[in-house]
Image (cartoon, rainbow, N blue to C red; front, side, top):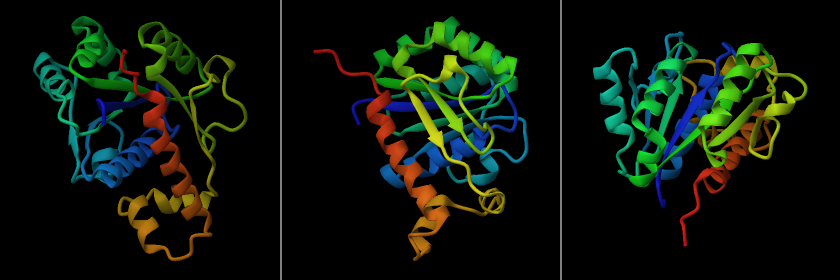
Length: 223
């Protein structure tokens, strides 16, 4: 691992699969690396800490103390990959804080690589937020997530670039199954003997996609 990655998973739109993406990423990193740390900045229930309490901490960006506590953890090059489930209510404060302290430049200086996974929606708030991020975030660090269960059809044209992760839609009964607080993607892959099941193939395909993400998202070292 050349740099310590931070995956900031965000959407301004509710009910688009942001926490699902955070769960997948967190479980994948824990399986791949043996360790992972996730931060839940989310007022909605259930949230990431409810699904993965053993590796997830709650955080807030409401006051200066909370912001500094979080940033001190994020800019640490400790080789522990991190995931942030960023609720839409905290978007303005989080990215305002990042600008004020020059977070991305400071992180890269410390060999920490932040990556924004923007879970797409079709509403106006989603378009505005994505356009704002395009101006603030380096191109290599901004990746669109297309959750086909919540966003049927094509992505908005502005978001449909080369850096897109596609989560295919599951049948409703399987979506209900994985939404249980006790469900683990890694646990399912290990226990399910029939590798031809739709859920097994869906989970494995997404893990492979997330494995490839590190190569796509990490900044290349200068020669």
